[in-house]
Length: 606
Ligand code: AGP
Image (cartoon, rainbow, N blue to C red; front, side, top):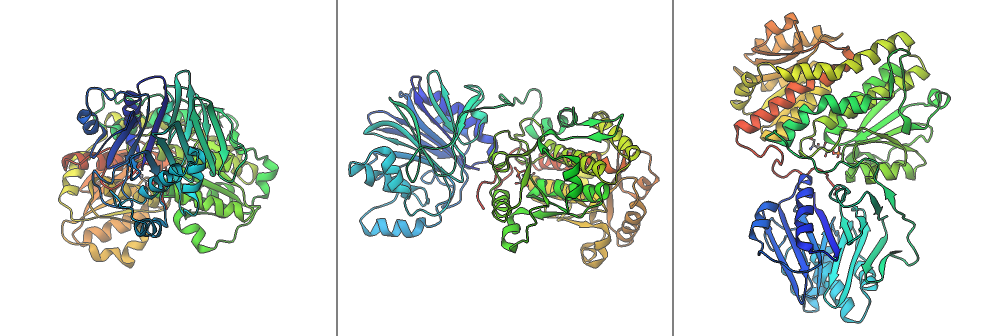
C-alpha cells in the first residue's frame, strides 16, 4: 500500500526520492508524487507508474529537502489531485500521509465552515490544512504537528515540510516510519528496504512518536510530550535492491528462488541425524513446550493458507489442538485468550494491519504472540518481540510465492520442535527432517521441467470460473492455488475441501468445466479420487496435480506430476504448478503479473 520517502540533507533531493519511490513500488500503488522545498513547493504528482512520474519531471528540480509518496486509494478516486503530496491552503506546508483518518469528513466539514476549500477528496488533506493553520499562529513545526493531530482518529505515518521552517517533521501512529541518518542527511521511509543502500543503522518510530530533523539534528519526542523511548537498531538482514536479472517478472523470479529461500529457512534449524528441530527465536524450553495447552495461528491471504497447513502439522506432530484464524475476524469475535497457549502471527510483510490488530487483542488479554515474519524489523516482528524470521529474501511481486513456502517450512520445523518435546518419536522426526531437507532439490528438479502447465492454462483461459479441490493438507494448497489464480487473472476461483464438493459446489459442474484437483500420494488420495470421479461424471475436465508416476494421472485431462516427497512436505511441491499456472494464465491474458489491479503488497489498513 502507500509508501513514503522523505529527505533532508545536503544532496539533491529529487534523485533520492525518485529512487526511493522505485524501491517502494512493490507495495502496490495507483499514483505517485513528490514535493521539493525551494522558495515555494515544487509539487509533481500523477496517477500511474513511478516511471511515468519520473519521465514527466523537469530535468532539474533543485532542492535538498523533499517528500514523496506512492498512493493506494482509500478515500477518493485514483486521480492526479488525490495523489500525494498535499499542500495547505496557502501552500506553505506540504505533507505525505500513510494510513486512514477515520473522522476526516467531520474535520473537513468543520474547516469548510471556516471557509477552507479543498483540492482533493482525500482524508489526508485535512492534516495539511490543520498544520498550516497551526504554524500560521506561530507554533513550531513540532507543536503544529501536535495540534494538527489532536482529535484525529485513525492511523498515520506523516512527513511534513514547511516553507517557513527548515525542518522535516514526521509522526507515526499505526503506519510505520523508519529513519536513517546518513553522513549527508536524514532519509525517512515507510519500510526499511529503500534505506538499505544508504545505511543499516535505523530508528523505527514508535506509535505516538514525533520526529523533527533540521539544522539542530534529530529530535524524537512523544505526542503527549517527553522523550521517545525508541533507539537506533542495526538491520540484521539487508536485502539490497531486488534486481530482476534475466527474469521477465518478479513473480517468476520468486517462484524460481524457492529452493534457495527454503534452504535459508531450514539451515541450522533441523538435525536430520537426531530428528531434532529448533527455531532459535522461540526462546521456549522443551519443558515449556510440553505445557502448551493449544496453539492459535493468525494470518491473512497466503499467510492464512500457510497457517492452516501449520495448524494441521502441529496437531498431527504434537498432538495438541491447533487452529488457524482469519486475522481480520479475530478481535471481532471477542476471543477467549488463554495466556498459557501459544500464538503465532504469520506475515510476510510484517505490516498487515488486520494481523497487527489481532496480536494486540491477544496481548491485551494477557497472551504472548510469536511472529513468523519475513521483513526484519517490521511492525509485527517488533510488536511480538519473539518468533522467527522466515528468511525468504525480498518478495516484490504482490502475489506471494516463496514466502508461502518458507512460512510452511518454518511452521513444519516448529511442529517438529514441539512434537519432539511431546509425542513425536525420534524415528518419525528423522524421516521428516530428511524429507524436508530434500525438498529444495526436488523443487529445483520440478521447476527445470514443470510439465504440461500450458495445457492447463489453455483450459483455464476458457473457464468462466474455476473450482479447486484438495483434502487434508492439500485442501489448503487448493485454497492457495485458487487465491493465486484469482488475484492474478481475475477469474473467479472457489476452493473447497474435496469432501465438501458434494454439499454445494457440485452445482457448478457442467460439461467441460475445469476443476483443479490437488491430490499427492498421501493417506487421503483415494478419497480425493472419488471426488474426481464425481466431477467427471458431470462432464467436468480435471487438471490434476499429483505425485510423479501415480496412476491417478490417468483420470485427468491434464496431469501435472510433482516429485515424490514426505507426505507432510507435499504442499511445498504441489503448490508449484498452481503458482506457475496463475503466472502463465495472467501472461496469456496480458495482465500485470507483478502488480495485479487493486491489490497491495502490504495491506496496512483494516
Ligand atoms: C498473497 O498472494 C496476497 N497478495 C495476500 O493475500 C497476502 O498474502 C496477505 O495480504 C497477507 O500479507 P502478509 O503476509 O504480508 O501479512
